[in-house]
Length: 194
View 1 (cartoon, rainbow, N blue to C red):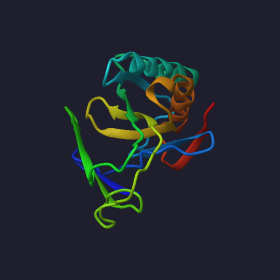
View 2 (spheres, rainbow, N blue to C red):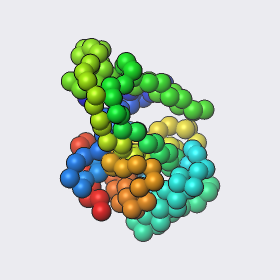
View 3 (tube, rainbow, N blue to C red):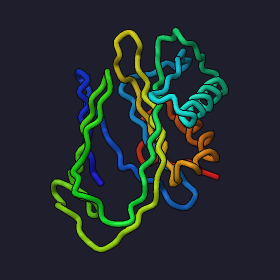
View 4 (cartoon, helix red, strand yellow):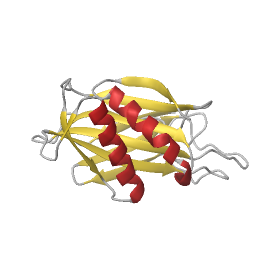
């Protein structure tokens, strides 16, 4: 699946990754660094949703940052924004979809499927067929912003195959992999999951 994301933030074009998880006890890791990130980072950690799950993810992330010798403070010059998404498995072919539009107060993102041999895409057309089943995947997305300008400095995603009520064993590994990749670009990265 080839996808292109266009961030409507001045001067930034963002990559969007396939939202699937690797097989065989591996999670997927993707990260893009747009600018150099200081080795010693002072950062605040926020969540887009204050659900119990996202608050647990925030607590895991704070613990991992502190273990990595990063400073966590509410008035820090950098803000790490966290969100989680469950991509449910499908029992049958989905309705036609070439992409999606997502937006919040500071960022709008358009995701379009350009080419895919297994999903609807602009070049590949509508994928038809009989009943199909895909596994659910769970994703944690982390976005690092410089607070004064609001610029996105780094973005990372950790993805595992799991239902929402099965993700607790994966949270520590997912946040650990994101902290280890902080400030780096990682393509096709993996991390072991229990």
